[in-house]
Image (cartoon, rainbow, N blue to C red; front, side):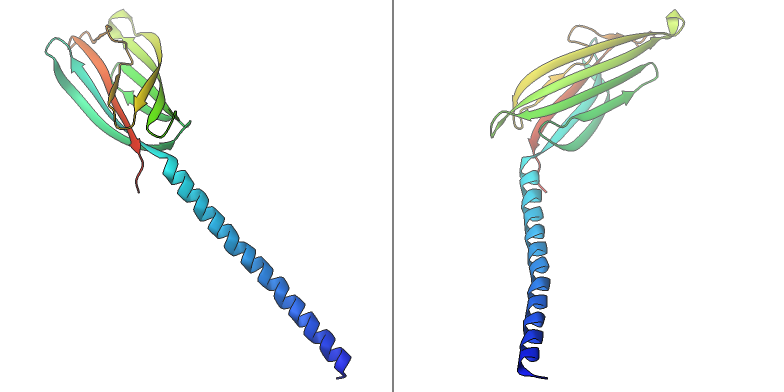
Length: 171
């Protein structure tokens, strides 16, 4: 091979190697960017802890309870669904960041109550409230309202309470 041909091959080989090294470097940058994005996402993630309970107000006694924990981010709702013999409760909780320690929690509730004494008539109720809260501060959400107890017809009056507290997610 002549010297100019060898130089061309060397230059071509060098260009090919640089061309291959470029995409590898940008893939490494992409992985680093993705890692940073995941870290930022987890830094803003929240854990919503919910204690759902049915209370007999006459006896001031809890007759049923259930604990749930869900992970979400600001602006994304968490749904809780409770199915009973004659009632369905669906509650959505959406946290919005106000600052580093304070949130605005939007609570929406829907209930369907079927009364067997009235030929299966179903009553639909909704509730909506916006609550300013601090991280870790417990709040009570009453999907049936504060003075509305559920008349089961069999057991007597019952009320549904959802105790919620929100904290930072920690993996």
